[in-house]
Amino acid sequence: MKNTKLDSLDKKIQKTHSEHLGLQIPENYFSESKENILAQISNKKRGKLMPFSRKNIIWFTTAAAVLIFTVMIFKPKEFPAAEPVITFVTDSIDVLKNESLANNEVATYEEDILLTSLFVEDNQINKFVDNYIIEDIIEDIQHVD
Amino acid sequence: MKDEADFIKKLTDRKSQDEAFKKLLDLYQERLYWHIRKLVITHDNANDVLQNTFLRIYKGLPNFKQNSTLHTWMYKIAYNESLRFLEENKKKYTISIDDVSEKYLENLMEDEFFEGTEIQLKLQQVLSKLPEKQRHIFQLKYYDDLKFKEIEVILDINENTLKTSYYSTVKFIESTILTVELYKKDRT
Image (cartoon, rainbow over all chains, first blue to last red; front, side):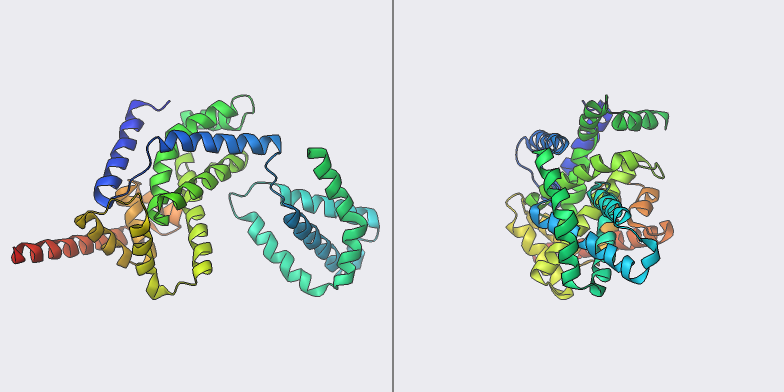
């Protein structure tokens, strides 16, 4: 519930926008909008609204694999064994899934990944994705469902 | 400040989060809507951006560092979401800089929730001619009633620059509208 002061401020703002700028809104818009927003948040919490469509999953896993291969090729000593690689990939996917998007973190991360993807062969990506990534992701989807 | 700190605590505590977020919506939904609406023009666009804004706010709350007030932080998110929306639309329609003003007015006229009296349309035309940033500064100050210190955080523009821009815009709008009114008076 709004307090009286803020309620009158909102009414003043609406009046200004309506009278000066001619901007109108549908009746009951704000109460419906509030319900929609709360419903979306509730769905996200239950995991029904998948932030990762199948297309995004394949994109992110490919990008993560590319990043790993690039580091392996240019800095082989950093990742000598397979297990740390898988952990790194899993961690990378978790970072990408992290929904702290207030500061455009994901956009910057995507740009970095796309740049590194220029240095890795397609068949290397395919092999890595087939062997390690898809199984984990499918397992995740099944677990959520 | 203590009240705000307590409120933020409730917003990030799982037990009180849902109720606190409903209160946040009650407090800020309308103001953020009007802020967004002026930027993206039509009601449908504003509705989409508003939804995305509150989803981002919800997701970002655990990481809110309190470098600014909650109020300013949310306006900044709304502003960035609106710009992101506008950028995506520019790419879709490949609008040239010269066409931006026309597109602004075109979108406005097509919006079923634009009333469009003569003076309202005139004011919108004047606003559409302003450079984008200058228009945003004016809208944030005059229509959203924000302080210059808050606008400085939202737009990342120095306060003195904001003041200069705002006052020159006010003069420009006054003289333009006044010219129109005088012209109409002369003709009657």
